[in-house]
Length: 360
Image 1 (cartoon, rainbow, N blue to C red):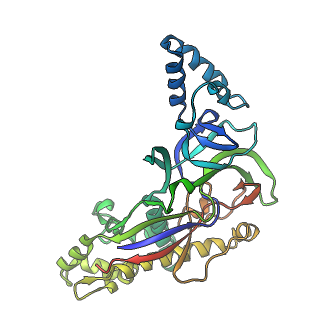
Image 2: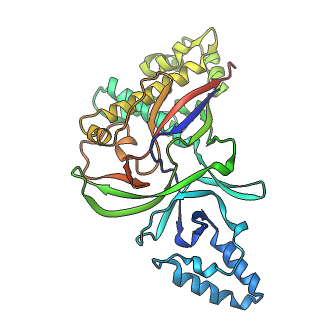
Image 3: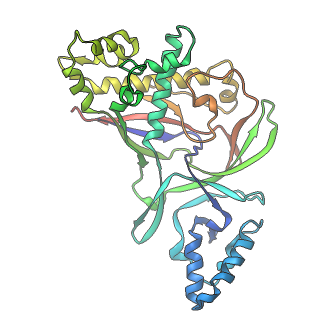
């Protein structure tokens, strides 16, 4: 097992697929918080002591929901403090355009009698990055006939034509945990909401705007990657003269990543994980320094670390499709940029750093 720390380098959008509305954001003493509108409405019904007023209240709520003004005035007569959900929102755009806000990936937790909706980064997000990076490495070094499917098939250790890909994909043996926010005091966590613009090379906006929660710069998350023990057991049970062992040996990538790290019936899991992290950093460098897209990163002052123990990557929504596929597309017409605290930033840049590993 290897413990890793993720550090947010630029505003990063990890969305849940849900959206919030103005009514889900509440201002108190100059600070913004999320609330659950149903809790507020229930409190109104309870306070007036007349359940028949529910329909009237709901109707007013619906009427106010998409208006430019916040629906906060509807709830001015109820006790609100115990319904404000942390973390606080440090930045909330002052715009009449806001109707919907992309929500972040999180979970509810009660801490010291306060409700939190704590952010996290799904393990599947990081595992998907590693997979894309490995396929990119294969594509770049073993192009063959130029068919991307051939590059994808090289992460399978059986014959993909005769076996289920789900069972033959090497990533079935690689487990990546969710990454949880790293902080001494949860009350110190804050998030922000930014405005996403799609602009062209000249910096002109296409007019399409979105609003989203983002994880701010320097926020940290911790998690782990491990190679399942099943892989070592599987390799021990293989006879070196068998067909399936030859499938590993014939595959230059799996031979380098797996077989060369399997010595005396012991699998060097740390070496395999570092191999994958290096391919991730290699992929990120290839995109950032590519002829097609380097102007994006230079303009927004993106720097790739020279430290061999720090691995740069891009995650989340709005990072750009060219950072989500193994083979870079030829050109782009528009790309997303976030206006975060009155500064235009490229989204999704993170670093992963090894924090420690279990020798077992």
